[in-house]
Length: 289
Image 1 (cartoon, rainbow, N blue to C red):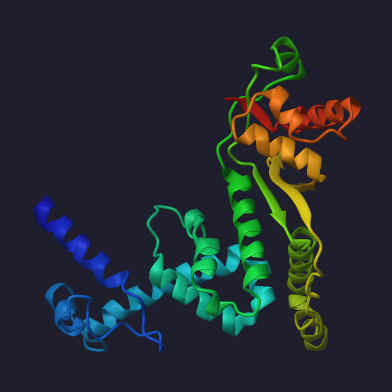
Image 2: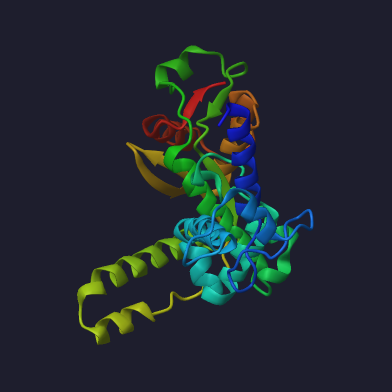
């Protein structure tokens, strides 16, 4: 086969695979152009003595879609615990139908899930606001885990430059989040529950059922400010107070250091600022803009 013929075959295969499955997890009977999928499959896949061309293509389509769905499950344990399996499964399928994978890596698959929850609240109602907060937090963890890292700055770098002109940036892997629930505690509790369930997988059935069916309580309302980051290749989330958070937001927005500190408010004491920046430098949060 010539290269152009191979490329056309690859594109045809891709077009059939990315079309969402039916409600029964079967390959759609017709393609987006209206052609019968059985006719399309017959053009480039041979039948055998057990399966038709359509059935053979369906195996690949199911493998593709089930892997995508599984990936969202893996990256969203908190959202799954909040919504339950039925609602979460419906949400994931609707999301992937509107925002299919456009990246070479499954790492990016949930990037627009918070946006989708806002755009289509019916899938998560009456928990849309909380679901959106959890989805944002879980995507921030993905970013923190393997996002880009730039050379950091030291305390001496900060001290050597005039505060009115020095502009610091936050590392690209850092996400600043404000939430109306303690979503960090909630997601951590879900992960601990899941870890216990995994440890009990080889235990007697009664213990496995008891641990597996234990629900994590819904978080109660309470505003938090949290920095999702990594340190020494480990994922962390650190709560900060409102003044500290506003300073970090101002730095992320490109404001000079002096203005950013002013964003914290008049009640901020110099000793607090020194402590916050020493911690930030130690954790590698800052880089040059």
